Image (tube, rainbow, N blue to C red):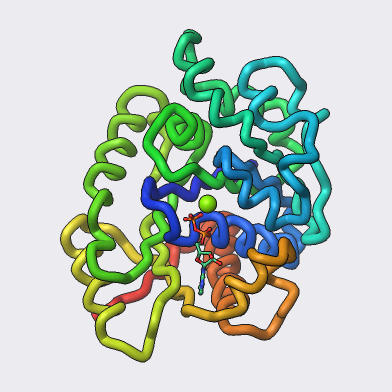
Length: 263
Ligand code: ADP
Ligand code: MG
């Protein structure tokens, strides 16, 4: 069965896109066939996988509006993941979708067409809780929340969890909150740990293992439009590989997803 995982947090800069790109590449290295979906009008995932959003003639926008078949829009990438790209057109999709019945189901309906070609589909949600994120959560089986472990990391988490609960009640009763992933984690300070355990306790959120350490390689990679996984040995890439193994065991062997105890 295809597993569809949404990566969501309405806060920007918490490593949603980095997580989708890195986890996708790490899963592909494990011979998992992966589709990644860029749901952010900024197109950062599209760019980081080597495609310039400004040069694309069609994107997820046309798929959501029913103007293109999803199979005609998919792109190959050098990371061996397939990409459903975004362009800035997607910024207008919110308003266009709002006028349509069943607007939360547009992505789910499209993914059904290609799901059997992929083992895992990762959805990079935009930094808002609007109709695009609702489409991501409605299409997904599971959701992960990346948390940057800095002061005020908890702000907005309650609102996100309420949105997840509403989606479970209204458009997707199959949705499971898998937990948080600690991103840009600084293991050398107790601050990251304290913030993480505070958020985990406050919201009863499991924290998936392992945390993703802060590493300068990620900033370099996303700026150059080349994969973060190509520098195979850096500690961030290694952590995403472990996270991929953790998720694969959970999906394939039904093992409980391994968690990290920040305290
Ligand atoms: P989001 O999609 O949530 O807005 P991004 O994935 O674009 O976040 O990441 C925001 C910034 O943080 C980017 O510049 C990215 O390169 C950087 N970043 C992500 N993960 C790490 C990390 N583990 N260490 C250092 N920088 C990171
Ligand atoms: Mg992003």
